[in-house]
Image (cartoon, rainbow, N blue to C red; front, side, top):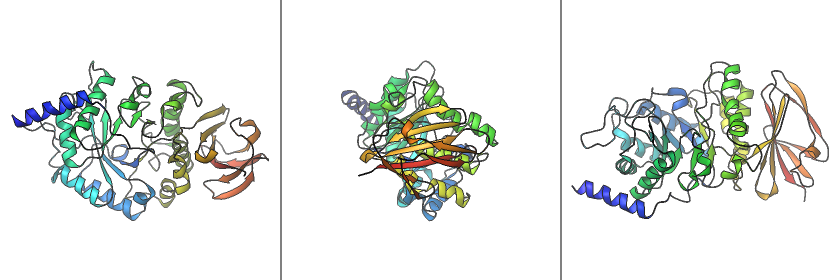
Length: 397
C-alpha cells in the first residue's frame, strides 16, 4: 500500500512539474556501450573488466566516463512486485553492486531499456512501469538511461518519452536521458525539453568488410542524417543541437571488424565535426595501439567537446570528396576533407572557396600535429581512400 501511494505521489509530482534534469550533457556525452561488439553476450565480469581497462589505457581520463550496459541484461520476467530485475546468471551480484563498482572506478553508470512492452532483445520493457522502473534505476545509481523504441505498438513517441522523462525527474536522481527512437518521429523537433540526446536514424550497421561498413555502415548514417532526414546546411538538423541537447547518429564503430584504420579515423573525425556523442562500441580490452590512439586523441576530442556546442555540417559534396565545417568557440573553425573515393588522391583545399571563412586563419593539421601556415595559400594533400584531412583554423590576430 505504501509503495502504491509513493508511486502515485511521484506521478502527480511529475505531472505538475514536468521537466528533464538540466545541467547535464553540456558537451556530447562520452563513454562505452556493450551492444556493437557483444550484443546479448554480456555479464558483470565483462563490464567490470572493460572499466578496469579503460582506466589502465587512459580512456577514462580522456573523457569516456559513461559505461552503458545495453539490452539483454534483464531477467526474462519481472519479480512478483513488478520490479525489473537483472539476469541472475549474467549479473549474479545485481545491478546495484555493478553500479557501485563502476562509480568506485570514477565512471558513471548507464543502462538500457525500452519504451515498449518488450526490449528489442525480447526482455521486459518499460511501458506501464515507467515510475516504478525509474525508482529502481535511481536506487541502483544509474546516471544514463538509453531508452529504445521496440514493441511500442500505437504509442505516441513524444508522450511516451515525456512519461519516462517525468518518471526520472520524480525519482530524484539526475540521469542523462538518451532517446533511442531512431528518428522515426523527428525527435529533433520536440525532444529538447524531453531528453539530452536523441537518435536521428536507424541503427549503425556492422558489416564484415570495408565495403559493407562504408556503404551500409557509418557513412550511410552520416548521409542519412544530412540528406534523408532534413535539409543540408547549418540551418538544417544542426539547428536543434547544442549544450544539453544533441543529435545522436548512433555509437562508434571505430576499431570494429571491417574498418580500415583510415575509415576509423574518418568516422571518428566526422562524429566530432557533427558534435555527436562519442560512445565507443569496440572491445576495449583487445584493441590495437592505432585504434587506441584514434579514440584518445585529445585534439580531435576537443573539437567534439567544444564549448560553443554548434554542430557541424556538410559544406560541399562533389565526386570523390566532401568538405565538412564546424564553427568553434573563439571564432575558430574545424574543417574536415573526406576522400570518398576508392583510391588515394591528391586533394587541393582552396580556402577562399569556403565561404564561412572570414579573414585569415592559421591552419593546423589536427591528426599530424603540424602547423601548416595560413589560409592565404591553397594547399594540396595526399589523402588515402576513405581517409580525411582534419584542420583546425584560428583567426590571425
